[in-house]
Image 1 (cartoon, rainbow, N blue to C red):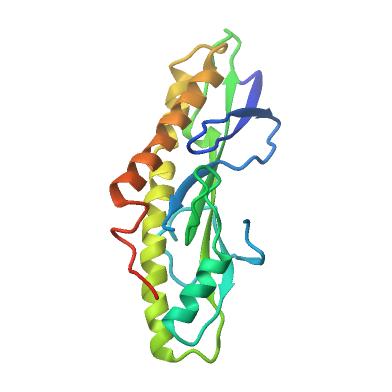
Image 2 (cartoon, one colour; image 1 turned 120 degrees about the vertical axis):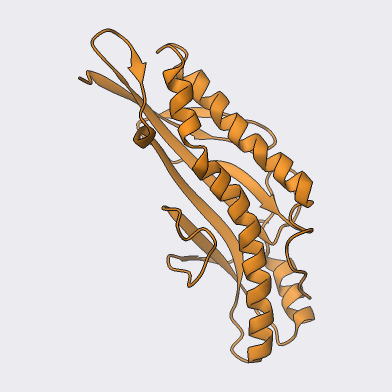
Length: 214
């Protein structure tokens, strides 16, 4: 029987490893991943994207920044002007993924703390360009869609790994004491996030897998 519970969330900067443990479900953002080569001047939240590689993962939101152009070079200039900056190494990127974990554990009457997989909550945001020029030709839209899909496939590599390993956080809590449960959970998140560094290094921030555009 649960006597009481502890709720924690984590904000992490992918390279800087800056942790901030919060209580009572605040909403810090876990910066997790970076793709390719200023905050966005204009972004819109897209709650329903027709096709994404991560459509089967719950609580993933696509945030679009609008770009325009009637040829690939013009669209590339628009992307370069609007795309976000990786907050860790200050590299301008075409796409950016953030994910967030919230976790809790339960104390029983014997003073033992435990977490179940459902005690670890996951959400993510993927920022990507959206072509808004109605005058662009159908062929150009098709070319852009192929590029965008390859960009989202790379982002899926970040998001899916974090989603698939969320149970590591619960396992870490269960292997710890009540006093060390939060430290163990943060270490598990650090291990998950370190995958992003290796993944981007292996793919050269996606340049080896994302279709070039413009």
